[in-house]
Amino acid sequence: MGPVDVLVVGGGPAGVALAAACSRVGLTTGLVDPAPDRPWAATYGMWSREIPADLPTSVVAARAAGRAIALTEHRLGWEYAVLDVPALRHHFHDQLSAVAIHAGRAVGSPAPGVVALADGSELRASVVVDAGGRWRPLDGRPTARAAAAQTAYGLVLDEDAAAPLHRPGDALFMDWRADHGELGWPTFLYVIPLGGGRVLVEETSLARRPGLPMSTLRRRLHTRLAHHGVALPNDVVSERVSFPVDQVRHRGSGALGFGAAAPLVHPATGYSLAASLRLAPRVADAIAAHLPGGPDRALAAAQRTVWSRGAKIVHRFRRIGLEALLRMPPDDVPGFFEQFFGLPDEHRWTYLTARDDVRGIVTAMNCLFLQSSGRLRGHLVTSAVRRPVVTNDAVAVS
Image (tube, rainbow, N blue to C red; front, side):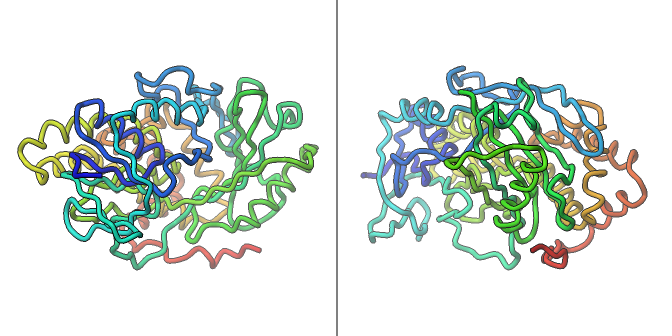
């Protein structure tokens, strides 16, 4: 593959969406991935209001009203959309006919515009994008601190089997009740419709440093299901989730970090797909507009698009919120979310979805602070000034 305008490393949803967007605006585009034809295995969801206008309705497998349970139940007032992942992949891959696709594993970027592959070959482009997910193959600088991780263990059930936990037309965003019967690090139940009569039930650790072991999550989910009288078939399909929620921003000097590699992962929810899909056309437009001035200008414009000043500030505030959660005594976590879900709708929406609304984030956090107990206020204040938690292993898990 010869030099192109844009080379995207990573064939997941974020990378493919950006490659398609670059191709649409007339940029010669390449995509490199170890297995570009592999299916996308993860379950993806987002609030319906976040779905980009140019996505066809066929990529949505199910829609449901969002609710959450902390100390009491809360109707969130927003519709949750679960995506049909094969349809999403097909939608974007249909737009890659003009994209040069290379099967290979990127291992670094020895110089700006150059991507080294594991087989010893190199690919070149004016602008290089690292959309390689949590592994970030073009950002080789190590970090000293272990990342906080979201981990989850889930099972796919049919609607009848999941009936004790799933209401038709509902998506249970969080249920912090300890129906698993265990003390220690808090986890919640996540229950969403997948379409086609299937339901995903998942035990989730929102964030922990290091991530809560899969064995703990599996045990808790099975105990929780038994508590509600849910019988499991012998051939039940499982899902395992583990990814960092607080990686530092991509530091590859000659590459743009995009998607989870940026990272666009929301420190408080773990979501990143909606942000990636909405940003992809804007990044492509920025590259196309500035590439005539040279690769450096195009790369800088793309980086500013992903990380505007407002986006950096908002991300920092959310990282403070994450550290407050990591410092919180386990018994206080459901009460914290009771406070959060009790905020006015616009504040909850801004905190969960807005990337660069600094005023909105500050207003939401001020509202939470004023409505909180002195104990919670202390967590928020100290988390803003103290060093990050090194480990949560002081809270015993078995």
